[in-house]
Image (cartoon, rainbow, N blue to C red; front, side, top):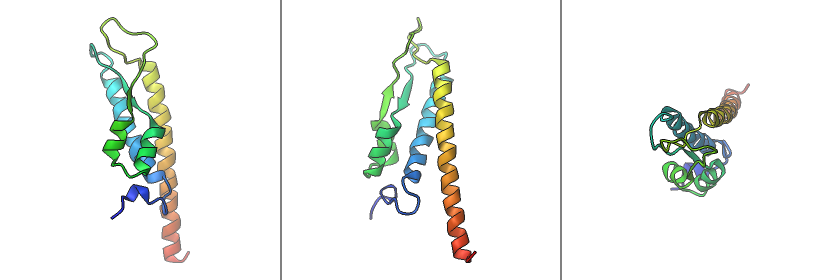
Length: 120
């Protein structure tokens, strides 16, 4: 049986993109939550790499893990924490916008299919 993410017929790549964006959102939120933790290393998911891996049939967790990278700080803190709150907030906002757009596309597609089934 094939992986649903590799079947791009009904929703295109948007189903896989939603999974990757969701995992990225969690990782960025973790960075923000650990902004005051000494020695914490901020991480991010390379969205394009994770999406490509997902579309090639890797599981969502495996694709996200393989595309996770440590952030390179512009200015390191004395305690070794690499979270730069402004950068994290920007990444979170950009990812949230992408997540919302992807979700709206899927909802629109479901609405179109529903209307077609009802004969509207």
